Amino acid sequence: MAEIPYKIYLEETEMPTAWYNMRADMKVKPAPLLNPGTGKPMTAEELGGVFCEELVKQELDNDNRWVEIPQEIRDFYRMYRPSPLVRAYCLEKKLDTPAKIYYKFEGNNTSGSHKLNSAIAQAYYAKKQGLKGVTTETGAGQWGTALSMACAYLELDCKVYMVKVSYEQKPFRREVMRTYGAEVTPSPSMTTQVGRKILEEFPGTTGSLGCAISEAVEAATSQPGYRYVLGSVLNQVLLHQSVIGLETKAALDKYGVHPDIIIGCAGGGSNLGGLIAPFMGEKLRGEADYRIVAVEPASCPSFTRGVFAYDFCDTGMICPLAKMYTLGSGFIPAPNHAGGLRFHGMSGILSQLYHDGFMEAVSVPQTKVFEAAEAFARVEGILPAPESAHAIRAAMDEAMKCRETGEAKTIVFGLTGTGYFDMVAYEKYHDGKMDDYIPTDEDLKKALEKLPKVAEA
Ligand SMILES: *Cc1c(COP(=O)(O)O)cnc(C)c1O
Image (cartoon, rainbow, N blue to C red; front, top):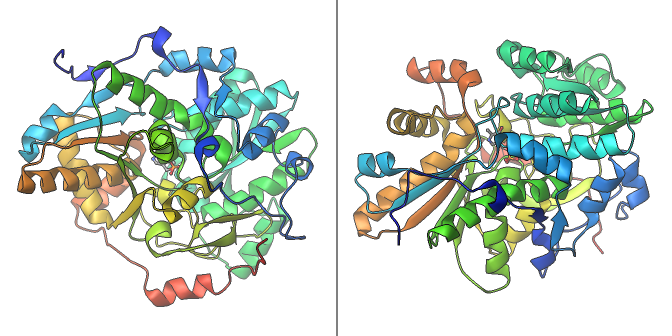
């Protein structure tokens, strides 16, 4: 077998031509979205009021294993994909571990993260439907940036509700979005009914993803020619992100490498769901086995301390109900610096898989995450996003376990993005001003008490 290069690239001809839909191989399918008014599963027609038609089809498709990637999207992917799969030789040496570590790096595009993979798909279907534009929310700003880029490319209008704390802390992110033509509003805002209501109830709030989602949905449904798009959590987003896992698997297969452990950070679950997709498919079909690990912040521990129940995806309680691991839609996490991981819920697909024992989850405190981020940057060169560094932390911990046991396990993790816009967080870490607030059981109980009551079929 040829020696494994530092970076394994794929030829353009080896790139995926179809997305892989994990749901087709799940014996227990993720629970359907429910209409919060009637408690009945959302129909395609109801969903069509909020989302583009083709995306509704993808959202509800539990059966087709492969969905062809339209040629226009494949052409766009070719501008920044395939993303490299890197053998972390330098990190292995630094950790003095027999483990073999690989990471799939999704930060090589201007938006700086994997989110562009789904942004271009969602913008494409909106354009194809003849819409004027799309609305969305953004937390740390990665999704808003990705969507702005996709909309600029396709000449679509893009309205972004940005969580206020990020809007203020990350002016550069905001300007990147405006460079790509997006209209950016800090959330909660006075521009929507739900924003005004949240501001009345919680004056001075710095916002949350849940609030911003409520505003973006209202903005989409209250003006003609607009639909709402979401950067994570939804089945369709995991479908688009499967391109990450398909490329990873193709690259590993080229060198006959079988991973033992696959690790990813989990906010709403889209990068992790995408990275693990083809591997999970094999696991579900009984063809191979892998340990799959979700890593979440200790300040927002949906998997490890949440409950598996129907809940709202947004704070304003206007979105459909999703069955997922949740901390309660009223849960507003401490201002952790991994903005992309501050969501109270989790993908329904990953929630079902976790519930059924197909994957594990761990939570890590943020100072430990930044310690890993810095160690990684110093040996591998890439300055990681705080979100991505959660996966680095867990991968390093696994590699150090191998040092103890002498096992040469193969670890693959998702390096979802770069952290250039997160230097305020790095500054806090360097100055010793970063804390590790972990919610108490009492904090969690308060938000969970307000879960909607749903009689499941
Ligand atoms: C948004 C984001 C995440 C978390 O979102 P998922 O949907 O869980 O993948 C992780 N890393 C980066 C860099 C992000 O921008």
